[in-house]
Image (tube, rainbow, N blue to C red; front, side, top):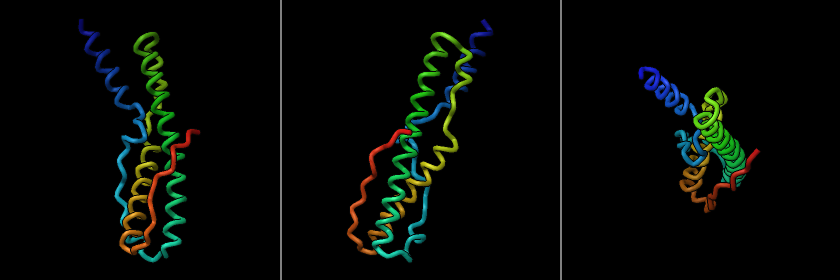
Length: 127
């Protein structure tokens, strides 16, 4: 009976390391003052670059989350050592959070300068 709580504890701790979906990664705060010296055209160009990179990283993040979900399912049903193949997402999620914050800061800078730029996130690109 004492092995069961230990096994459940191990599984829960490994599940906590699973990668989260890109839409669950919250933006990191980036000050819009970083972009105050840019012209509206430069803000638009930077926003396109950040949006494209955000979409790319979102695709990577979602692929990691899906891979971790499959590994977890296999581990729980068939083969518990598969739990060690769960990758997690710390580095990728950090970059994605920073990019989301940059995009928000660029949008705020655009609003402050009355640039009239319409901000839309690029579609997610899986690698």
